[in-house]
Length: 444
Image 1 (spheres, rainbow, N blue to C red):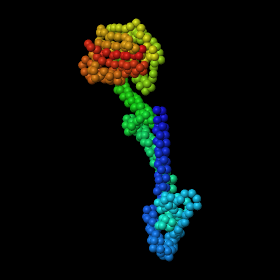
Image 2: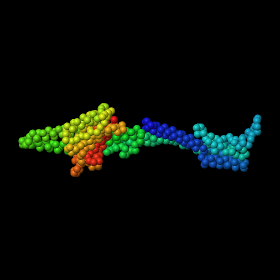
Image 3: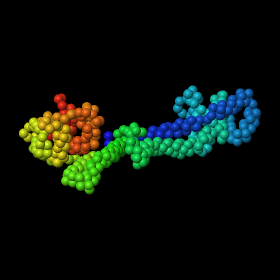
Image 4: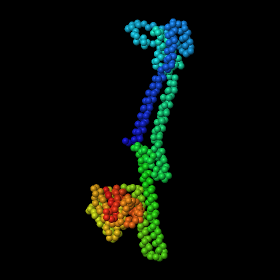
């Protein structure tokens, strides 16, 4: 789902607001309903007054009843009276028993009081006989809804404000929590901790914030790898270049002492050329590692390219036998002739370097499914199986063991990066008999 964070916030806000105001409305109505009835104690008090009046009427003590009513009126500061009604039917049916049961001049003590009315209602206590009525204007102290003003502020101001504040805090924390991890991770990364990742402290999902966090972690991982690679490359190159520089310095001393000057000049020339090639390969390797370019821009015949590389190598290594087993033509599309040529040449020269004189290096070119496979099998000592992947590391050196290759420069590492830049793969393993077999698989 696109804009997952937007929809998630929309659902939370909409449902939260609707549910909150629905509940608030229901609670407000319920509270208003509850506050619209007389308290039980007040109801009983009114009934007790009615019973007192009933006793006076029963005993026909009307003078005492009048005195008691006047005193009650003064005490409660309200209007109180006892009346006798005379209802006569002028037309229609006679009055039923149900009418007399529900008939009243005032309000029953159990009835709801309308709080919106400014005046207090007249309450009635039914007496016997049923045409006698005890009426009292509800005293102010008994009027329900005393806390109505408080309820107004509570339900319309305080609770909505508190709820919105809580929702704001929740949304703020929901958004700020990953941003705080962003802040800490970027701070750590800027201080040199290149292992700082947001995903180590936060469960990442599919929303926009998680996607940004994943992008940052991917960027941090790649940047960390590049920095580490360049550090190692610079360190290894500095170490590797010390030896030819030392040789050049020794050769210069020999020339100063007039010791074999021609031979020393030739050595200086060779060492300088080797350092130049080392620097060029290292810079190219660093460029490929940093930029990760997609070099698939050309189409060419792989067989012709390898034939040209073998011709140059045969001239440089005339004492080695190169056995080529290939198809006549093998066309590659969306590749890069220069990058692939340099990669295959580095692999071939590495094999020839460790192939003894008058021994054979085999190059096999074939089509495997929809891919082209080039296999270089030399007659050298091979390597330990645990080093199959490590030989493609710049300046990798194997332990000094008899019968194994001692070290590799940047040639194979550069070849691997060139091959990967055209979406190919390269692997190494020992041949069944002897030697090292390096296989290159390319999309054709």
